Amino acid sequence: MNEQVVLNLKNFHAHLPAKCGVVRAVNGISLQIARGRVLGLVGESGCGKSITCLSLLGLTRENGWVLTGEAQMQGKNLLALNAEAIRRCRGKEIAIIMQNPMAAFNPLATIGQHFTETIRSHLPLPEKASRDLAIKCLGYVGLPQPEKLMGQYSFQLSGGMLQRVMIAIALAMEPKVLIADEPTTSLDVTVQRQILGQLIHLKEKSRTGMLLVSHDLGVIAQMADDVAVMYCGYIVELAAAERLFNNPLHPYTRALLASKPQMRKKSLQTIGGQAPSLLNLARGCPFFARCSEKNRHCSHYSPELIQYDHRHLVGCAKYAVEQRTLQHGFA
Ligand SMILES: Nc1ncnc2c1ncn2[C@@H]1O[C@H](COP(=O)(O)OP(=O)(O)OP(=O)(O)O)[C@@H](O)[C@H]1O
Ligand code: NI
Image (cartoon, rainbow, N blue to C red; front, side):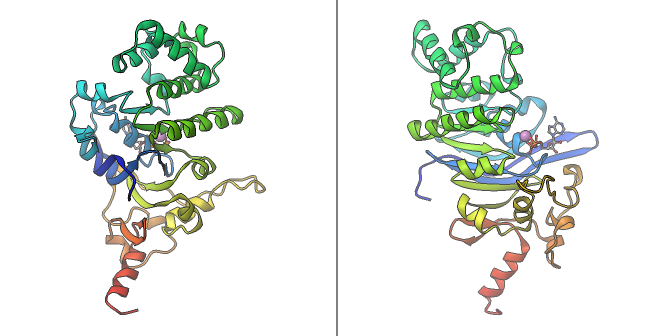
């Protein structure tokens, strides 16, 4: 990649020791986010997308998640920073729009206090100027009556409005990296379009690099430059968006794309079977039980990504075997 990498995630694991075993939510993923580019992250519910997002901001450690690997950003490993150091990075260097935004707001502070404190902890702006900037950005994301909103508390607002407040904060701070976890899911279509437009604006104006999680493959197709497909805490495929949509390699990616709700067919086709529990993940490919293309290598193949083509990585035994066969001239 020639682009300037702003966040480099290497072999990242997030495990939660529980009474009945270890929840293996993320199992050694590697990703790069480049300036001014959007990396889409897709996968079924429960595959570890939000835990990845929250961990990057240091928001899972207090809940007992054990994080290993590296998340390099400007010479710092975010995973190794102490609570105070990671707090200092939040907002200006790395910001998040959360899937459940209520948790991000202190119920005792008004939106205005929250917003201006975030601005002033990073930018040398006097009180009045930071207030003006906050009001401007709240208006910018289409929230009505921004002045009034500044005096309200988070519990008085809907989840969708709080998400928009988080986007407004990101617009004000122009972070280097924005983690957007389902940023438009609870919004109606018109507002959704507006918000996506704001995110594009942020990416173009401030060259913010983004990790965009969405269930909506239409949103991903519209927004993402590259797409990573996650399954049971593994990245199973990673490629430029257009390539991934036109030439998906992994059987899981193919099934996921096929399950996209069709406009004409009312019902949503789903992938047969269920993902295995993250509590007792066996060795071998986690998609094994559901895969229609499995071969004898799959039960002991752990989904290591191989370079299938230029910037197209896949973690499937089928392609590893193909490549090995080609290399050894058995084809
Ligand atoms: N506090 C917790 N205690 C135990 N397990 C948890 C906890 N939080 C998350 N998990 C488990 O970790 C796994 C990953 O969850 P995560 O929220 O990252 O999924 P996701 O991909 O974001 O799903 P969704 O698309 O539904 O948002 C899930 O299997 C979930 O059950
Ligand atoms: Ni999630």
